[in-house]
Length: 219
Image (cartoon, rainbow, N blue to C red; front, side, top):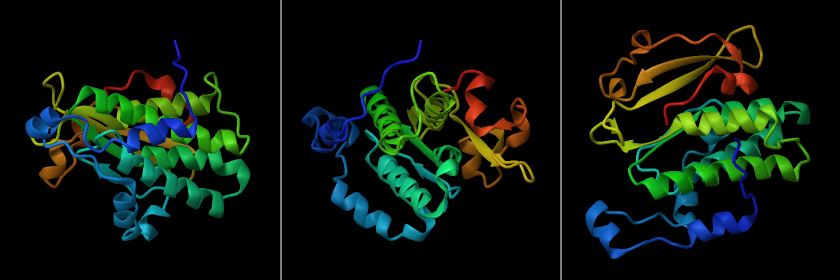
């Protein structure tokens, strides 16, 4: 069953207004959410990188998604400026595939994924690009978010189940526009300086808007 996602501006505003959720969370987890104006100022420093659809970003303490959403919004704005209308769905999925996050707390993790998806869908809805729950665009977007934004502990490299955090690299297939090769790897291998692509099962290359057909994510 596909969940319905609210896409109005109130979804983002509600999340961003709350910088401290409770004293307990601040004391126990050091949780203080970054206000949007500070997020924007920090991202201004890497604006040229954000204009590259495939440039990868990882937020190791994703909170409820404020950095990830701001990154996505800037990538989508660059797509709107630089790509023809008919290429927006494909380019936006590649942009989404380049954004990763890790968040420890369950409610934050859920909020982050919801906010990222609603931001993605709102971009397309406002430009009359079909993105209903039954479309491949919606399903692949939801799948990429579930796979790339995981609930876990960056310091230990373990997910909420105690398993090693895994990500997937979504590599474009040269000579095949719109086709992606999924290559899973362990987050811990990033610290070792050599990504362990050969350790995990192989996936067949497929179109970026069909990645949801390859099976469940591990998020």
